[in-house]
Amino acid sequence: MRTFSKSQPLSLVLLGGSLGSMVIFEEVLKLLTSPPDCALIFILHRGKSSTALLPDLFRRKTGVVMIEPDHLEEIRSAHVYFALPDCHLLIGPDRRFYYDLSDKDFFSRPSIDAAFVSAAVSGIPVKAAFLFSGSSPDGAFGMRVLAEKGFATYVLDPAEAESPRMPEEAIKLYHGHRLINRANFTRIINDIIYSNGV
Amino acid sequence: MNLLEYPDLEVLIMQIRNASGFDFSGYARPSLLRRASRYLTKNKLTLPQLISHLEPESDIVFDLMQEMTVNYSEMFRDPDFFIGVKSEVFTYLESYPGLRFWVAGCASGEEAFSLAILLKECGYLNRSLIYATDLNNKVLTAAREGVFTLSNVRTFSENYLLAHGQNSLSDYYHVSYNKAVISREIRKNIVFSLHDLTGDGVFNEFQFISCRNVMIYFTLELRQRVFRLLYESLSMLGFLCLGKRETLRYSGIEQNFRVVDTVLNIYQKIK
Image 1 (cartoon, rainbow over the protein chains, first blue to last red):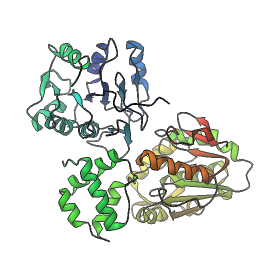
Image 2: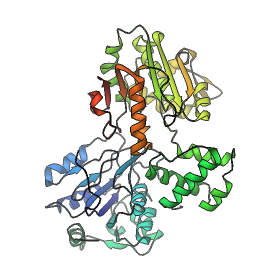
Image 3: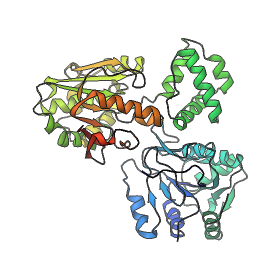
Image 4: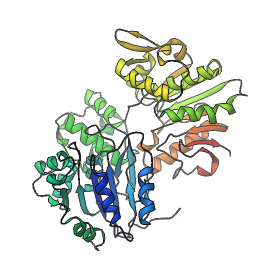
């Protein structure tokens, strides 16, 4: 087993979404031309029985390591992670992933709030968090916590979201999120995932 | 929604230990933090308010423990697990005159009842004894009664069919006062008893242990201790079932097992 040095720099980029976000996730992954300077963590609401298809689908496209992490797996830079269906994915202060099978948030497991809040209090720097399209308010609280901790937070312009409720709820709960849209999408994502530092 | 931070959680763990004697210090912090925060939110409490209410024997200590130890389960949860157990494990058990099963962390008995039904349908139930244990006395009382709401049973029935059950789940319960009561025939070979995986020791030797969705709540260190206990409780060539979300990775006992199923995480003790 490879050991992981705590001194190795690690920062997180968090991406959450539900209905209508899959297409956007694909666009983000298409921008990955080389290993990113961070760990990219995707939390997507998906059906209980959906299997590990998601990473497989993308792995073929990009050549960057993409996995559904195991419970207790070390979080590594330059890796892309996807939350498993029907299981919350938490980020621990010891730089490991933790599964949690407790109650759903807003009928969702994995919950975006659960992952984002755990990242916010983990002590690991968060380069940026993104919330895209969806029909539930999940993610709004997590985004606010991240923003209040001083991390950069981006919400998809509800006017451009296939399902605007998720970004709207986030903006309602906290006014300071930056908006991401068609025009600035590529530049913002590229700048964040390939920039050094937080 | 309330937001707790890790230092708050350590204070809470200490206060719970003082008030109830129950020690959460071996439980995985990220998960505990989430559940303690949810408890505060649900009950509209702040942390200082909660701590001031924590007195020995108080309902709130009990309530909080309920919240912090996850007791949610389903009958035939992850139906393919039961298909796998039947095809990959039961054939090995054919030759044993008597069989002992342990459902470790049994909550309200869902897994134990499912296993009993599976054994019944395969013709093994009469020579099987299922020990089902949990650290929570209240859920054990519910388990002994074997009573579920009809809406829960609807989910269980769907799972049962997906698990290739041979009959209808309703053959194994009767409805009384709008509740489903698991039949005596299924309950009679199950012993429900109190056992804390984190503190209690080996109490019998088993051919089969199911400990699904339990280990993920323990810290890396405690987890290794509990894995040791499970290992020591298994007979040679006995089976350990961890379920889809938990592997033997980081357990410290990987080398003593053969992998029977990589998706369902079924292992066989080989040394």
